[in-house]
Amino acid sequence: MYKAKKLKNALIKSSLKILIAIICFLCPTSCSLQRLNVQTHYVNREQLASYHVYTPDPHKENPTIGQTILIQWHMLKQDQNFREFYLHLAIRFRNRREENIYLQLTKSSGTYLYHLLNEKFCFSGGIATYKIDLIGDECLLESWTHPLWVDLISFDFSTENTKKEQETFNKSKSAKY
Image (cartoon, rainbow, N blue to C red; front, side, top):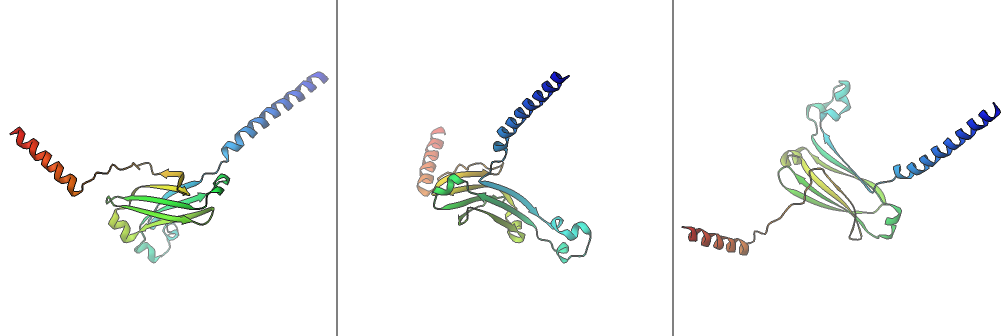
């Protein structure tokens, strides 16, 4: 009986050591901080508290509509060597326009909220996609892209190229007939 109790205690101690080792191995990997966190939210009458509790509110009759992008940044210890930090926001709207915003960051962590509300939202049709880059001394530290973001292929439609292409097209067209 004494040996069985001693064996049981030894088994418990060894299993506790294994459990502690597993916890120590998993904890550092699960608690890592991200430099950049981005969320998109729609703004409409359903975000009003009065909408959910059925109380009178003049904002329910003429609500704010639109979208917001919430950007949170946090510099890591290895980033302290950089002198200047910037956020570059490339936002594409549904009306095929694009807006580029550069923000100089003065704090090692913080939040920026981009608003697209009311008339601007209606004119643009809303945010289609976006890409946000965190830059330190001209080096890309981290990038966050919306799932629909793709790099655009741009074409040079300057007058010289257009004239040359038109001449080539006309020559090939006249050669066929």
